[in-house]
Image 1 (tube, rainbow, N blue to C red):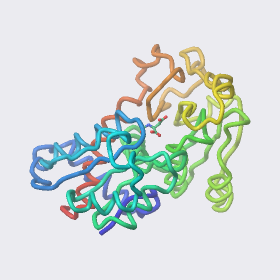
Image 2: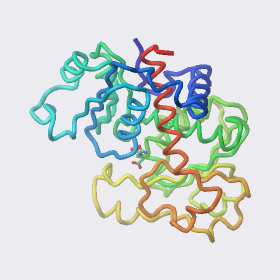
Image 3: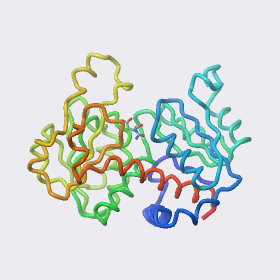
Image 4: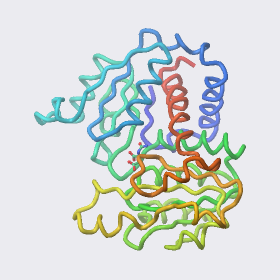
Length: 304
Ligand code: NCD
């Protein structure tokens, strides 16, 4: 039995396999419509979510399976003080697989060590978000036709943005990847990613505060929201929240085949005027996330 806690739990070959399954689901959805008949996914979300929870649930329904859900932290026994370990043991009695989001870094890992069924990390604090990375990888593969040889600009809250941490870990394994890290001084990439991934592996990167100067060199621009819920004081959040707002004007010097990505939700980071630009990929990421979660469930349940 395996869980997905960190994106590196999957080898590059396993990632390729998931992308291949997702592409096959897109081409032949009917083939998979009964694959998880009789299986149950439990979604345990102790933090807000729209896309991640609904895409997991839609994924399970489209595989013919069922879903058990806890409506929120306040309505589960976590509110009575139950430990993550006990919750995981309990849910293992009812479901076949768990998707868990939690504000504490490491909570899904603790759950996976105590559950007797696979656990998927659906976001743990400011740490990791491996299934968003699955959505991002399928999007990059489908938009660019490759996962290697490109310059990826990551812009916004690189400190608390968990999707950025997982994406860097995943993309650093491919050839010819260069990162441009665009953030305010206060929201720079944490050293466990900068040192532990980029420097230790000799990956080419550059740090800047200037989005427009970086724009012409980018193949991918990955915008992120400033993570209000991780700030210690509201004043700092208010000062930093609108550090980067992508407008059509700022895309003037961008490549014609730039892919503009965002894990969503967007607050102000991308002007709605860009939504109709053919380079905007963020709603494609939403849809691709469902297909990759279908592929992941199939593999973790050993249906495929
Ligand atoms: C992201 C998250 O939860 O980390 N959302 C998502 O799952 N698509 C990004 C964010 O909240 O900013």
